[in-house]
Image (tube, rainbow, N blue to C red; front, side, top):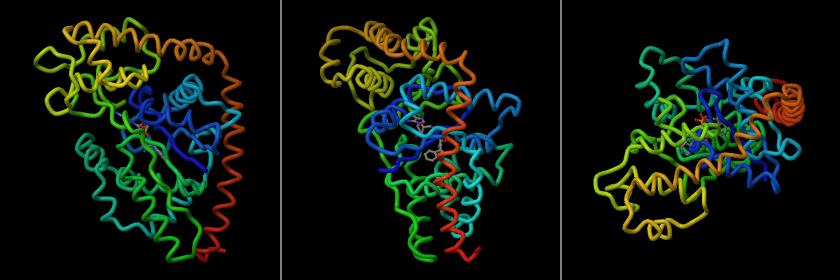
Length: 325
Ligand code: TYM
């Protein structure tokens, strides 16, 4: 299968991004043709510092590698370096009904969050995302739950294009983990964990042990003291149980049993250790990779060349079908 996915370079990659997306990418990389990029063009739709953008992109590539992506197996590159993404986005925007974009949950949320900056890119963002996916004729898109609606729109646009101009695009399916598709914020477990929120609301893949300890010990929990999974009554502890279970591969009922008669404090201490141990190799690899600038640059250049070959081939077909050649 051809698989496509990406992450925006805004803010550090956190355990939500890892459990919702990157962990799936790693298990897919051996048997599929995978295209994973850093979505720098998407990041321009919300406030950012131009002078920090390149550093952020490099940090994301380091995170991909430190988490276990193998650059010999997957195509890794920066979105803006393959110009066909923006070209296809424009072409797809001409067949995308505005109503479809206005009903996107992420557009509504971000327009509320960034009231001072409701730019057109925020609205047309899912068209660029559809272009990212269709350019490579992806069959599947591994992401967390929050991107499902965008992948659904991608299928709609693929169908519309195929009907209007002739069959080119497969309709890509969403691929989400059974658990972990929506990891919640540590400071407000009713909200999803998000890179653009305050740092104490997420665990970054590279947080140092002391920082992890502080964040988990002060994570919002619920009334009562039993360590029991119940999303409506105990959203805080249920979120922490989900993280514990995914990082240890231990089913939640077993974890609950281990903590019968113990309180939130004991559970949080154990979870802290689980996270610190799990992320230890990530921190080690990050430190190694930070001094290998040339290696990172080479990976991106090689990735972008491979991506461009696929993208150019698709665009020849698209331009021809749309009457542009
Ligand atoms: P982004 O950068 O917001 O998030 C990257 C990936 O992490 C997942 N994710 C989560 N999963 C579980 N729990 C959470 N709390 C959580 N927060 C984020 C996201 O679902 C995503 O998979 N628009 C995309 C980037 C993108 C893209 C694409 C993805 C651009 N083009 C094409 C797939 C295909 C985004 O902003 O992801």
